[in-house]
Image (cartoon, rainbow, N blue to C red; front, side, top):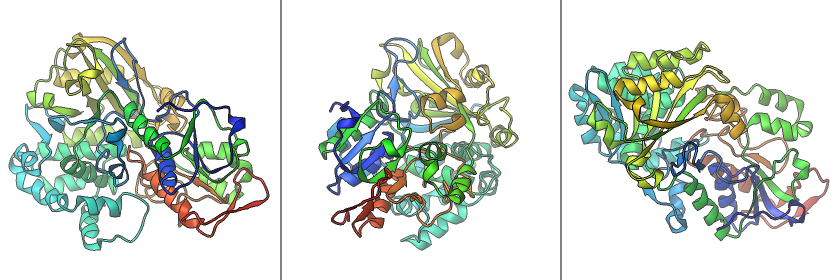
Length: 502
């Protein structure tokens, strides 16, 4: 369905206004609209989607995902799986294997859809891997519902405690404690490095275990035609519920929003201070100003004359390939971030969607996508270092490059103001800030301004395309306003008497 472009000043009064149309903003909008509320979504860019946009970045006919390309939570997210997105045009494509992690000695650790097949690629650590992750596969749905979201008492405490005892550990410690050989250690380290933190930090095992579980129970699919089609499906479903979307409207102040009962902001702490700073208590504003951004990303997109020529044929079966070698090498790469240094031999994440989705490139040609982690705001050009890591495991790769597109940390922030300094996770996701983002509050989505809630990835559960920040923020708004007295967030003095929202 087409996105609306009605003039802003003709907007009627809405039950809710959502600023930002990324998966979390649309998640909040859908959650409220499903309750029968009238909802308006406002997007600053000309197109919706936030981190789920697709464009011809290199050459005509080569479609590249600008940010998020692979979606482990497209079917694992309790929120996204509840939506009829297939009826609104979403088609997921599953590679033959979610992930490959090659080593210099020719061995390749494979994350397969089944635990058993994965274990077979890990040699002497097959049994250890099965013991580590196998007990959680059958109960993954319950585990995700308990752990992926705001801090709360789990409904399955024994399951959550058992998982938590593994997840709380530094990834380096868990890998060395469970595994004796390098393939399994490297596989776990590569998964954990998605946290964009030094792997010696506590809780870095959590993201690795969650992503591994997601690979087994839901896969790591790509979206046919590009990630933009996920945003389009979310928008289409939202509009089928009566929701409205306006693009090309950059919000500079809460006062310019149309009257509403609730405002949901899919923006980061810095943007919130910009548009609402004069209405925030000084203590809260100071705490918000101390929010810690995470490391940045440096990304390359390639138009390729052919598929990446991996030395290991197993890598051609995977939608995603982790490059960087052994556990020690990956730990050194991610550890450099803690020292504010760009890694010389970076951990590189590669996506090769055109192997499984032919709509991404002209016939016989391919797209490639890769990024590495760098200090926040880094200006170091990582092009040669990234391509050197690909060439290391795929000799002749550079000869296939027809064109490349570069996104530096500053480019990420220009593209999306939430990606401060190239931080694609919406803030550091370490143990100190995982559940207390953006500040420590009983309800992390609430703000001191009545009726105004934050729903970006700077709230729990953080980065990733899952829509859960928006979902949980909307549920918090519904609960907190069930008494029916909702202040106008735009700053008007009167209250609007309304029936309960929930």
